[in-house]
Picture 1: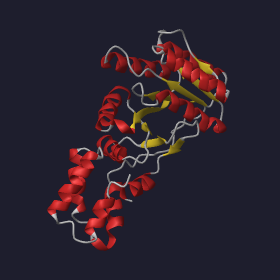
Picture 2: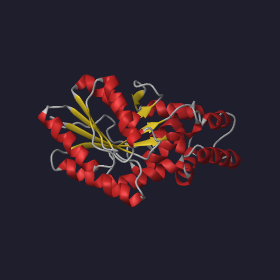
Picture 3: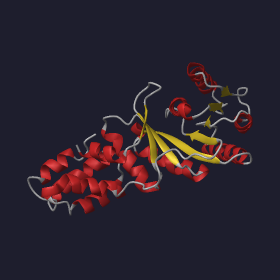
Picture 4: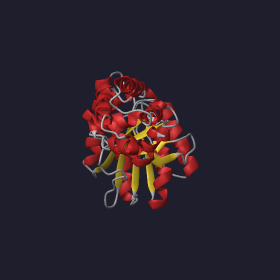
Length: 277
């Protein structure tokens, strides 16, 4: 990503009181999806960065903007229920499969295809289930997603499953319908067993729109963590900083490719180093 590479090279030759350099950095931060408020705050703090330890000082400034909440997957004694939410096209269903693959070595896993309004999503998850030899609970097309989730949690408890990952709808007729449906699924699940996590999948290339998505979903279902997909070498990786600073929701995993193994824990130190160098 290297958003701050040019900035660091310049302050080695001058100082951060140079308004022209700071305004140029501000423009770069905006282009990197950090947003106006966070970009201005970083600029203000960067004024105190000293030439002799510029890289470490800037790293400290950026890390201070990140969430301090736990980044590991939260688990419950017995069954750990995880809802995965997000808009269609963000990589949501694939992320569900990647999570199942990642945690199946820690205990038995069950998947629920509760995106019943999109046949392709159900078929995609079923295909992943067959490849991974993990059972997928599904219902008829356009059936009640909460009913599928309920069947899945009942099956999980009866079979002493360790992890239940639930794929949910990413689009209904309007935003209100979608958020109401997600809230309903969570309420139905928690009548039987607590939901340990609600993970929101965001495509890093959507830029500031990703931050707006996070705000909307967080209002509806109390998002506890984020899976950021397509966080590669592009400058748009700055959206991770914007989300954590704006909502205090920790990024827990990043999708790094299309393979089933391409899901990694989010390392804030390595992420910030990537922004700098």
